[in-house]
Length: 108
Image (cartoon, rainbow, N blue to C red):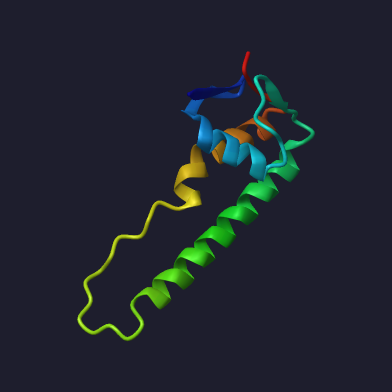
Protein backbone atom coordinates (compact mmCIF):
# COMPACT_ATOMS: atom_id res chain seq x y z
CA UNK A 1 0.00 0.00 0.00
CA UNK A 2 1.17 3.54 -0.70
CA UNK A 3 1.20 6.41 1.79
CA UNK A 4 1.13 10.01 0.58
CA UNK A 5 2.51 12.80 2.73
CA UNK A 6 1.19 16.28 2.06
CA UNK A 7 2.60 19.66 3.00
CA UNK A 8 1.85 23.10 1.66
CA UNK A 9 5.61 23.82 1.48
CA UNK A 10 6.47 20.88 -0.81
CA UNK A 11 5.05 18.61 -3.48
CA UNK A 12 3.32 15.46 -2.26
CA UNK A 13 5.60 12.57 -1.29
CA UNK A 14 4.40 9.01 -1.86
CA UNK A 15 6.16 5.93 -0.53
CA UNK A 16 5.51 2.32 0.34
CA UNK A 17 3.72 1.78 3.63
CA UNK A 18 6.54 -0.20 5.27
CA UNK A 19 9.09 2.56 4.62
CA UNK A 20 6.62 5.25 5.69
CA UNK A 21 5.91 3.34 8.91
CA UNK A 22 9.64 2.99 9.60
CA UNK A 23 10.42 6.68 8.98
CA UNK A 24 7.42 7.96 10.91
CA UNK A 25 8.40 5.66 13.77
CA UNK A 26 11.91 7.10 13.85
CA UNK A 27 10.51 10.59 14.33
CA UNK A 28 8.27 9.39 17.17
CA UNK A 29 4.92 9.01 15.45
CA UNK A 30 2.69 6.10 14.54
CA UNK A 31 1.47 5.57 11.02
CA UNK A 32 -2.29 5.48 11.40
CA UNK A 33 -5.00 5.97 8.83
CA UNK A 34 -4.47 9.69 9.34
CA UNK A 35 -1.70 11.62 10.98
CA UNK A 36 0.19 14.85 11.31
CA UNK A 37 3.63 16.10 12.19
CA UNK A 38 3.00 19.64 13.36
CA UNK A 39 5.42 22.45 12.68
CA UNK A 40 6.20 22.53 16.43
CA UNK A 41 7.30 18.87 16.27
CA UNK A 42 9.58 19.34 13.24
CA UNK A 43 12.86 20.30 14.99
CA UNK A 44 12.79 17.16 17.15
CA UNK A 45 11.64 14.99 14.22
CA UNK A 46 14.48 16.26 12.02
CA UNK A 47 17.04 15.70 14.78
CA UNK A 48 15.82 12.13 15.37
CA UNK A 49 15.93 11.26 11.68
CA UNK A 50 19.37 12.82 11.20
CA UNK A 51 20.69 10.89 14.22
CA UNK A 52 19.27 7.62 12.85
CA UNK A 53 20.96 8.30 9.49
CA UNK A 54 24.34 8.89 11.18
CA UNK A 55 23.97 5.66 13.16
CA UNK A 56 22.99 3.73 10.03
CA UNK A 57 25.99 5.08 8.10
CA UNK A 58 28.32 4.07 10.94
CA UNK A 59 26.87 0.56 11.05
CA UNK A 60 27.21 0.14 7.28
CA UNK A 61 30.81 1.38 7.36
CA UNK A 62 31.62 -0.97 10.24
CA UNK A 63 29.99 -3.88 8.47
CA UNK A 64 31.86 -3.13 5.25
CA UNK A 65 35.14 -2.94 7.19
CA UNK A 66 34.58 -6.38 8.72
CA UNK A 67 33.11 -7.88 5.57
CA UNK A 68 36.47 -8.14 3.84
CA UNK A 69 38.75 -8.85 6.79
CA UNK A 70 41.24 -11.49 5.83
CA UNK A 71 40.21 -11.58 2.16
CA UNK A 72 42.83 -11.13 -0.51
CA UNK A 73 42.01 -9.80 -3.94
CA UNK A 74 38.38 -9.22 -3.09
CA UNK A 75 36.27 -7.32 -5.55
CA UNK A 76 34.43 -4.22 -4.47
CA UNK A 77 30.98 -5.11 -3.21
CA UNK A 78 28.19 -2.63 -3.62
CA UNK A 79 26.83 -1.42 -0.30
CA UNK A 80 23.13 -1.86 0.33
CA UNK A 81 20.93 1.20 0.10
CA UNK A 82 21.11 2.82 3.49
CA UNK A 83 18.70 4.88 5.49
CA UNK A 84 20.23 8.11 4.16
CA UNK A 85 19.13 7.30 0.62
CA UNK A 86 15.70 6.01 1.60
CA UNK A 87 14.98 8.83 4.05
CA UNK A 88 16.29 11.77 2.00
CA UNK A 89 12.97 12.77 0.35
CA UNK A 90 11.17 12.62 3.71
CA UNK A 91 13.95 14.53 5.49
CA UNK A 92 13.88 17.12 2.72
CA UNK A 93 10.12 17.49 3.23
CA UNK A 94 10.59 17.89 7.00
CA UNK A 95 13.20 20.61 6.49
CA UNK A 96 11.09 22.49 3.94
CA UNK A 97 8.06 22.29 6.22
CA UNK A 98 10.14 23.68 9.08
CA UNK A 99 11.32 26.62 6.96
CA UNK A 100 7.70 27.44 6.04
CA UNK A 101 6.18 26.68 9.48
CA UNK A 102 3.97 24.09 7.80
CA UNK A 103 2.53 20.79 9.02
CA UNK A 104 2.96 17.43 7.29
CA UNK A 105 -0.21 15.37 6.91
CA UNK A 106 -1.05 11.90 5.69
CA UNK A 107 -4.29 10.06 5.13
CA UNK A 108 -6.22 13.14 4.07
